[in-house]
Amino acid sequence: MTYRSRMLVFVALNLAGMAVYFYFNQVFRVFPEEGGMPSRTGNAIYWALTQAPILLLYFVVNAAVLVAVVRRARKFRQRSALYPWLSVIAMWVAVVIVVYQSGHGFGAPQFLAAIATCAFG
Image (cartoon, rainbow, N blue to C red; front, side, top):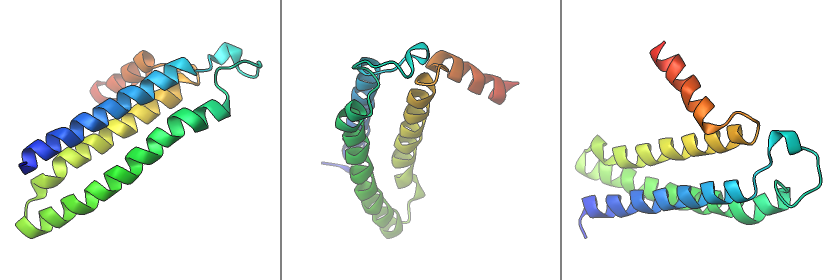
């Protein structure tokens, strides 16, 4: 398996993890107007059983891949080997921010519109 195909598999697996993370966020999401009300959604236990293991698994896997990518980048003197990893980490950061903001009444469309406003004036 070539390096390029391994990186494509790495990116695809991370995208699948992001989709699962979004799915569990939608299933167990607390709406701002329901905050503090007893219900099955938004309970910290559900988050700890569904979303936290996903984040932990991908954190560990991505950290291990980072070590391998840095070794490859040093060995072959290719900084471009880091680009797929950096793009995946940027996507994970965006996913976590969007999920966090959606739980506080500032959903993904508003969040992306605010980013676009800041970026493009």
